[in-house]
Image (cartoon, rainbow, N blue to C red; front, side, top):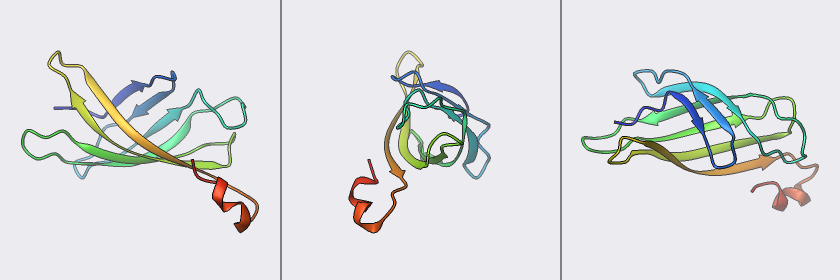
Length: 113
């Protein structure tokens, strides 16, 4: 079974730390990105999420949001699934959306990546 709690590192060397997942699937943690929109120095940002408990033989799905703290005017949402390969290595696969604040409704088209 895949355990979300712990320290994770992605291909961009960003770090995510998830505290223990509660019985109801809710979890919290921190995300330290190595990629910023404005090239500013990133800080650890709070994340909040939930894990869907898997059925028998299944791998858990999860989602979380990150509120980029003090260096960006953006919020990101991630959704993914956790897998364990035959060697016991845990892997998270995710898709994400990032919403950056814009100054007007006319600029809305460029606000989501």
